[in-house]
Length: 85
Image 1 (tube, rainbow, N blue to C red):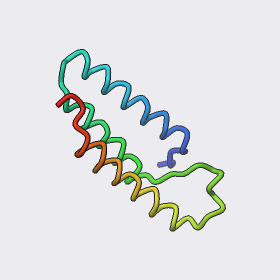
Image 2: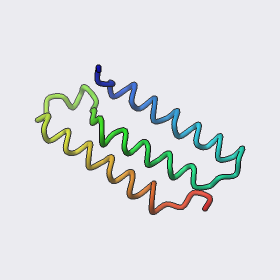
Image 3: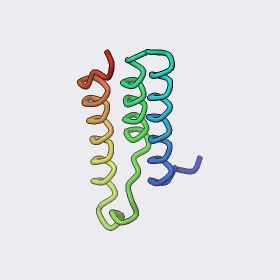
Image 4: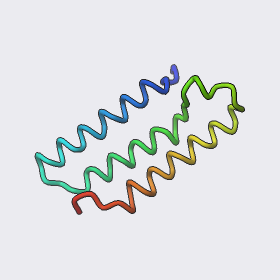
């Protein structure tokens, strides 16, 4: 399977968050926003991608950095921030 580009993955993340906001407002389920941030973090932790401008760096370090960023998104926005709960 072909790996997603950084641009496509950011668009997918934006759509996930926008849909979460919409469904949260329609169905009054506050935890849904946190669940979708966890999905976005998992998306970057499982499929680490970066912008082409950063491609000159060591790919091993970039992968590790993007995965750490994905885990931080899960911890901060998924567990610590309480959207509507």
